[in-house]
Image (cartoon, rainbow, N blue to C red):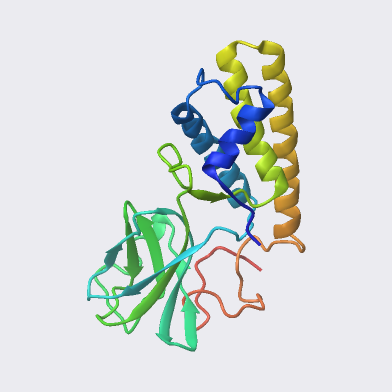
Amino acid sequence: MARTFKVSALLSRARQRTDQENSDFVTDAELKGVLSTGYAELYSILVESGMRYFESTEAITTDGGATTPLPSDFLSTIGVDYCPSSSSRRQLGELMAQERNLYAGSGGNEATAYAIVGQNLTFYPTPPSGQSYELLYIPQPLDLSEADDDDTIDVVTPDGEAFLDAYLQVEIYSKESDHDSVRGAIAKRERARERVEWWSTQRAMYEHRRPVVSEFDPAGELYGYGGRDFGFWDR
C-alpha cells in the first residue's frame, strides 16, 4: 500500500516541529524546492536497492525504423519485451556499446536485442513495421518545486516520511542559523536514511540476486533465442 501525504501536510508538519507555524521566514516556495530535492534522494535510495516499486510501461508499435523515442519521463531501463500476442512475450537482450555493429545493415522477423542511445530506444535487428513491443522502465521522480499544496506524494514507508520531515527541518534550522538544531536534524535524517536503505533492501532481496540472466535461469532461455548468448556469462 502506498503511504501518501499532501505537500501542504508535509510542510506544515516540518513547521510545527521547528516552531515556525506562524512564520514566513522560510517560505513555502523555498521548502517545496527542498522537498523536491529530498524526495528525489529518497526515490533514488529505493530504486538503487533493486526494489520494484516505481515502474512504468510504454507500448511501442514499430514503424519499420530501428529507433523510437524514449518516454519523456524516462530515467532508466528495466527491460524490453517483444509482444507478438496478448498472452505471449519474449525478453530482448541489451547490447553493449562494443556490440553495436553485430546487426549492422540487417533486418529480421523480429528484434532480439536493444540499446538505449541518447534519447532513443534502438532495436537490433531492425524489426518490420506493425510489431508490438513494451518498454518497462523507471520514470523520473516528481519535481515538487512548483507542486500545488493539495498534490500528494508517496513516501512509501514511515521512515521515508521521517526522512523528508528531517530534510525540511535541516533547511529551516539552517536558515535560522540554529547550528545545534541543524546538527540534530541532520542526525535524524541520516538515521531515517539508514532505516529506509535497510527496509528497501529487505523488501527487495529475500533471495540472492543472479548477476545476469543465464541459459540456466528458471525464467527461460537467454536473450537472442536459439541458444545464442551475448558473452555475459561463462560456465
